[in-house]
Image 1 (cartoon, one colour):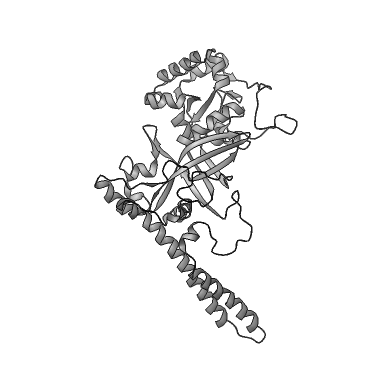
Image 2 (image 1 turned 180 degrees about the vertical axis):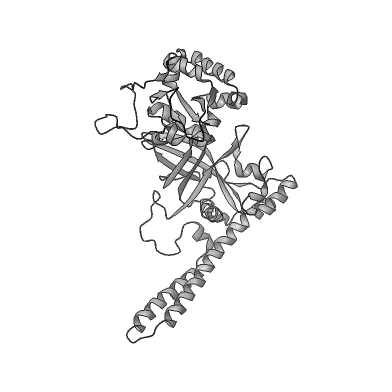
Length: 393
């Protein structure tokens, strides 16, 4: 995690050249020190490699080639000795990259993990532990960086997420500052410092939601309040830069059951049966061909892709799939079913009343109220406006 945090500090030029308060300087200094140590360590490694190459020359005819290789390592060491560590933090390569870098294909990546404490404290779990809200500080890494999604937008089949970052360079110093009533959170201010984008055509295999307008409204709530991880390409920037480049994430994973437990309102099975399929024992999915989806071929016809199901994945979105209530296959260790409903506005309702996460009667009333406000009947509202999940418990 420390290595990822150091690379992510490139979004703030490694905190070089910044004037900070004493408690924030304690957090920034470790990042600058690590960039200097990375440069000096690379210099030492180049010099050691040059010595090793020369020492391994044993036969005639090898010396000229070996000496040329040793000289290359000496030249790298000499170049890096005169390189400002701040420039390395701003993206100057240690060595010439094998492939040309562009803003959409930068040289560095880092894993990021988004996970809030809960809807009662929708801040990153590591910051929650740091401030004593949850967990133990003993388990915290000494150096880390965490994302906070501040903006999401869709552009066609692209989902773009922009994040601010919060850095902790020295856990011990941070805890001491908190004990003194000071805030040691070294963040990127009101500006996004990191951006990534996703292909919306890939997301239904995780979310189970095919209909494009519904997916476009669902994903910002997943990214802002959910548990997910991604390998984020890093485009170095100045701390004062307002814009941010958003390359494709190199890989990602979403914990849908944990996420839906935060953004989905709890309802009972009888409520689901009544409004989803008129009280029947199963919901037979009948796709509306007029619904726009992100999953289609060049002629606009829908493409069949694997969708999550309760047996294999431990959850299933059931407004867009066939679901048998009495005989749905469940994981052996999670035989029970829990039903949760997301809709545009469910998060605001939950933040206003956390009991919607645990009281099915309140949850059902909230869904019916949302349908009334939308001026459509509950069945149409659930089919057209919600993502309804069965979660294995």
